[in-house]
Structure formats: structure tokens, C-alpha cells
Image (cartoon, rainbow, N blue to C red; front, side, top):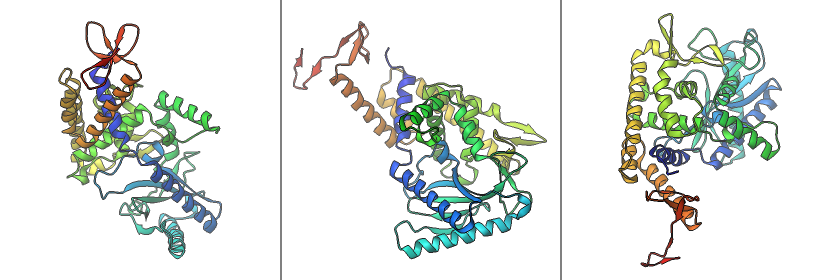
Length: 384
């Protein structure tokens, strides 16, 4: 079967977002660093403490920063397994800060390239350890005993009540939204001989779809960072709207059209509820800043227009399609992806697997209904 325009757009976008993945070497360094932080907290505070990643890193939807000087933002949970009645938000925040300060000093004394710089993050909820090319936002929390087993209560020094969350439960929910991801994770676990592997070890259509959306969103809001929607809102609505498609283009354009249906209104407030915790509203700032919701919907309309235009470009050639998508995405990355497609096409031809459909002249994968494409020496002769 000849590749459709949808297939070609999917391949272009997939090839491009692969370049936006966190590099494997940096990913391994990140895992090593937050593991080292966890070991330090255990040594200092005892076995009540644990550290694990949350957000886009653990979901496998990290995208490269939109500018050359940008850093990867990795969120990690610093969990103390105690009741909220045994401490206060301020006390817990300071306790974690003191231990991280000791950790930073220890690393500085070691005089290694891995020495982090500790600072207070403006979000009020976390501490930040800065490294070359990435930073770790360390979020202090305690157990949420009213919503076991994995819910947590996060410090927020500007809010009187603790902030509810459940990153482990959310990662499970996100994984379960994609049968393709479940199969890939099972295969990966069997391959390396372990019972379970984290989401970030594979890439599925759902993960790539979220990366495409986050990529376009970062470029769309490049000059309006304050109103840029949080990635957790994009990820949650996209996963809700995902219907199991394996084709990236179709999955994305369908999800973009259906995402607003999963925004609810309760007591005059808009909600994008955490599917793993009924009390967490990812869109809580939209009540205070209603223009952010309006801009979110406007961005979705823009993305839908871009994808519709790409889907309607049949017969206009690959260059037209790349340039059209490049108006909204990164033209350089799309050109890299297109060149890669060209290399893969040449490899198929060289292997004798590329054919032309009879009477149509369209390139496709060779089968009984196709005639092999002759090997070309580019010297005016073909070999038979």
C-alpha cells in the first residue's frame, strides 16, 4: 500500500520529536543524580525518606528546551513517610532544604564535575539543584493517608492547606491509556528480565503525541511564557482524548479536537482534574487568570489548523509539506527528519524492497503486485 499523506506527516513528526528527546547520556546522568540525592537523604534522615521522579521525565514525554541555553527541567519527589500532623509545611520544607544544603556542600568539597548549585524555586513548593544542562526541582511531601496508597501532600508555603497530588498514580493512569505502551513495557521487561520497567524506557504513539503538542505549544507561547499552559494540562487532556490510534498524525489531530471536552466546570471554576487524585485541579490558575483558558483554546485551534493544512497537502510534494509544517514547528528539525526518510527510502531500494505499484507509478514497499525498482548507478545506466 502506498504511503498516505497522513503516514508521511506521522513519519516526519516522529523523526523530528526523536531529536527533542532527552539524550540518553543526559537521561542516565539525571537518573544517577537523583539516585545520589536519595541516598544522601536516607543517610541523613533515615529510612523514612525516599526520592523518585515525577512529571514528564517519568512519563517519557520530556522535550528539549526551546532555546539553546535552556535546561531540562526534571521534577523529583522528596517523600517523608509520616503523617501531616507530625510536621508543618514550613518545617518540612526547611528540613529538606537543610539536608540538600549538606548534600551540596559535600559535593562541592569533593570537587567533582557533578557538584550542584542549590536554590529556592519560585514556585514555593520546591528546592532546586542546578547542574549543567538540567536542574532537579525537589518537591518535599508527606503521605496522604486519606487517599492511600500512593497519594501525597506537597508543601505550598502560600497555601494554608497542603497541596494534594499523586504522581505515581498518575504515571499508572497515563500508561494505562495506551495499550501500545503497555505492550511495549511488557516486552521491555521481558527483554531485560525484570518484572516491571518505568514508562520512560519506551516510546509509544501517546507519548510522541504529547511531545508534538508540547513542542508546538512552546514555540507558540515563546513570547508569552506567563500564559503558556502547564505541560501537565496538555498531557492530561491529550491522554483523555487519545483513542488508541497508532498513527501519530491521526492520533494528534483527533485528540486536539476532543481535548476541550475533558475540561469541566464546577462551582464556577474550570477543572482539569488529576485522574489519580480527585482533589487536585491542574487548571486552578484559570479561575484567577481566565485569559489563560482562552489562550489555551486559541492555541488548540491554531494547532488544528496546522495539522488540517498538512493533511490537505496531498500531491504537493515533500518539500511543500515540510515547509508548511515548518511554519508552525521547527523547520530545521523537520528537514532533518525528511533527510532521514530519504535515507531510509534509499536503504529499502538498495535492499530490493522498494517497488512501484503497477499502472500507478507510486513508490511503496515491494510485494507480489509491484515491480522492483532497478538499481541506479547514476551514470545513465541501470543494472538488470
